[in-house]
Image 1: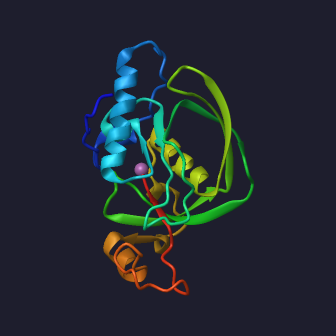
Image 2: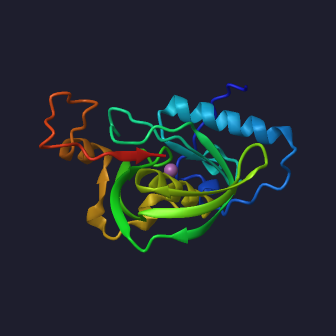
Image 3: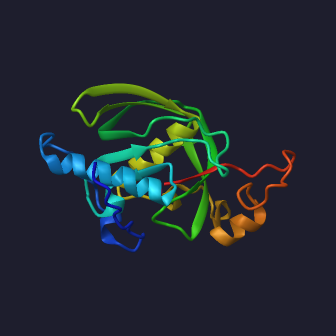
Length: 195
Ligand code: NI
């Protein structure tokens, strides 16, 4: 397995505003290298999701890697999965708002509405077609990463300006358990994703 940590683009980079193209050559060994690099980069950034455009590869590849951390203590634990060319085939009408961050937009947090569940078809890294339904936190990660394929970020999904905080304001308003172990459950830090 490759161990290359790729640098993560920030929002000013034009690749993050492009539409990502589908993967067509599943036999190209560079595809496996890119997926390995995304896994390594995501782990090193301590995130729960990443999309290929964030490392300047405008391709429809994302990693979802939900796991509980001090910051997201309720997150489900799962093996990281690579989703190639995912298509949304169903969405719940129910929406939920939750806090999100993005490895490409480190200065802000946003309170973002997302579908509570989402059903997708994708190809995995072995070339197998998979259908899956994601709910809650994992559905949120999927929708966040899918937006990166469309050239969008979570800031584009906010319903109002007041749903955007700077990272500093967020820390003050919601001192999280990572920095404040004495926080009581009566005043829980909201879990938010960083993708
Ligand atoms: Ni992101």
